[in-house]
Image (cartoon, one colour):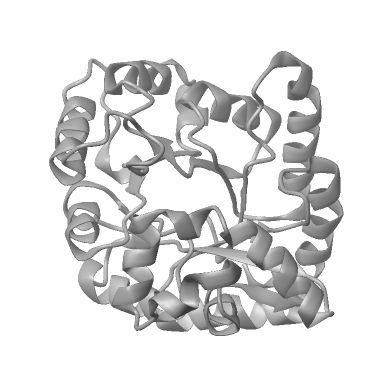
Length: 292
């Protein structure tokens, strides 16, 4: 299956563009429109957004590809997802990518047999009155089995919180044709100590989730790397810490390892904050958009 076209190399991954209520919608759509104007190829909305929430961003933009990264299969029924996809206007639908994932046992009470569950979910999308075609869906795959499924039953994979070594391994597993778009968290701060502090605040939540730590172990990290918010070695492998030029270098490392596209997530102290990340997006656009 041919990789998803038109995204270029650089996109933005963010939870800030998930409007959880009407009071947030105006600010979210204004920020999305600016991302479009800045020239990024895509925006990936985190936090298990619905297709309807992604539609708000699609409505506010003209060129951006908008993806869910990821929509949890435990939180959203396949029939509802397909119906919301079918409700998108055909021209808008061409800019939407459904990113799916199995989430984590600690976050989903019904979590069980994730690989068979994903296969069943994809089959339900195939059988819907308006199917979500394989070429418009991607999987948040980390391990080899889910990566194989991403190559066979979807356009490819959108791994989250991975080192370049994982990107190289994922490309080998996926083969040469499947789409591969890892997420890259970045802290735009040239004070390395302060940047690592922000990175540790961000990663602390994920270090309690075995799906991630098991993947880190496959890459050669140990339990010692998971203590106290993560070792310097782990943070340096997963994050881009420093200025926009450092982010550019890390993006190119992922591309050299086999990525088609890299979704950059701006990390700021204190967590989700649309007003705080928007200036950082502008800073990144100046340095990165020419690489599209």
